[in-house]
Structure formats: C-alpha cells, structure tokens
Amino acid sequence: MSSVQYRGRLAPAPTGYLHIGHARTFWTAQQRAAEAQGVLVLRSDDIDAVRAKMAFAEAMFEDLRWLGFRWQEGPDCGGPFGPYEQSQRRSYYQAAFEQLQAAGWIYPCRCTRKDVLRALQAPHAADEGPIYPGTCRPNPHVRIPHDTRRAPATSKLNWRFRVPDGETIEFLDGLFGRQQFVAGKDFGDFVVWRHDDLPAYQLSVVVDDAAMRITEVVRGADLLLSTARQLLLYRALGCSPPAFYHCPLLTDEAGVRLAKRHDSLSLRTLRRQGITPERVQARMNAQGSVAS
Image 1 (spheres, rainbow, N blue to C red):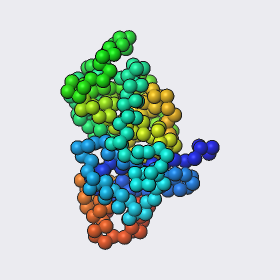
Image 2: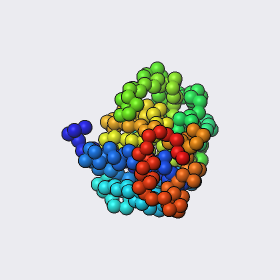
Image 3: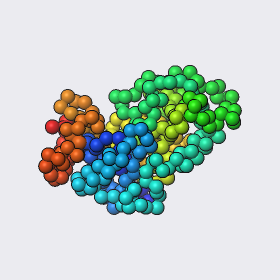
Image 4: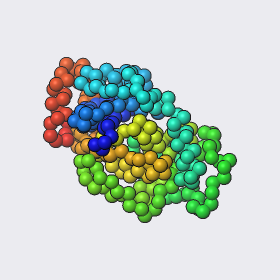
C-alpha cells in the first residue's frame, strides 16, 4: 500500500452508547492511520432506523472527541466521499443490489430465520446461527425471472448471496495471520437485502468501504468470519478489497464480550464518573482482554 494513501475508518452504529471495547478497537484504527500518515474516516452506520437514535449519534461524537479521537472525513466535517451516514446512502446499496442480481449472485428467499432478523447488524461470532440449508436456493442453471428482481417489502422476500460451496476463502489478517474459511461449511448463503426493503450489514459495509476507498479495515476479532463473506461480495461487485486487521476483544470479568448493555463500561458513564481521558487511554493500551 506504499503507493496508495492509507485510508482507515471508524464505523460505529448509533444504537447505544459506545463502550471501552469499541474505543480500544477504534484507538487501534486511529493509531494505524497515524503511523501510516493516512486519513481516518468516521462513518455513522445508522442504517437500522429502528435502533439508531439521534441521542446516541450525538453522544458518539461527544464521547469520541472527549477521548482524543480526531478524524479527517465524516458527517460533521464532510469529505470527498460523502455522505458519511448510511441512512443517506441508499442509492449506492440499490445499485450494488441490482448489479448482484443481474449477474445471478443472489436469489429471493421466503424463510423467516434469526439470521434474517439480525441481518442489519454485524454477526458477531457468538451470534452466528446455523448455516442456511438452502431451502430457497434455486437451481444454478435457472435464471431468476426479471419481474422478481425487486419485490416489494410486503412480499416478505429476503435476498441471499449464493456462496460457492467448497471454495476456500483465504486472507492474511494484519494481526492473526493467515485465515481460511470454506464456503458452504463454515458459512452458508447469507442475507444481503431484507424483506423490509433495507440492505443487510454485509452488503452495506462492503459498498461503503469500497466507495470511500478504505485501504484497511480495523475491527474486532469476532468479525473474522464476516470478512470471508465480504470478500465474496467484493469479488462479485468487481471491487478490490481492503486489508484487514482484527483486534482481540475486550471482555468483562466473566469473560463475556462487551456489548452496549454494559452501561458501566460505556464512555458516557466513565465521563460522568469523572474518569479522565488519559486514564481510559491507559486502560485501552494495557495488555490483556479483561475489563476491570
């Protein structure tokens, strides 16, 4: 990447208050961008209109600035690849959907499964459901009729990406090294568009990272498997994928991955308790994965 300016990103979803686990991953992203003398992009992944709240978005900006984060492009400062809120980028997702459909990569699905209900958010490792059994998968030699290309939300059709069964998806992670996942074994056909007419997480994040020319994605290790799915989408859309760097997860005293329900470890709570940014930064830089 020496001939290309480094472009990293922070992509929080304003569906709750950011906690120290988010902050530590974001801190790594900021450090890697600074070391590469690159650009750091802030994107608000607010595609989930039900869970995303303005109050959380405002807190997100305040808490990140308080902790010492600085970005060069984002919803508050603009940039050449805006808008930087997913809720304003529907046309990009629609174009990608139509490209995938025209090439035969996706098919309509009437199943009502937990992975469909969760398809707007990142599927963390502990939340991975069973591999889709292919109930609605059509014969690969039968083309889907044109009139089903975009069914209305009332039809209850979801759209799944057909994975190439048996293909090994391999990539080199910046921290964990070489990773390999087998399509159809480690993961199955996944949702890219929901029946309520919203793009799923896997599609929206690929489209945005490609459009914003992100050169490295820094995120939690629970999304390693998602990287395999997203690499298939990059290939199907004809886009070059970024590099990936997955960070160890921060956990609570019981060894459970931190989530937004851990209010006692949210940046907002730490601020109210009078804890200084420097102390939080020291905790983020400390070795070990257990929050205390």
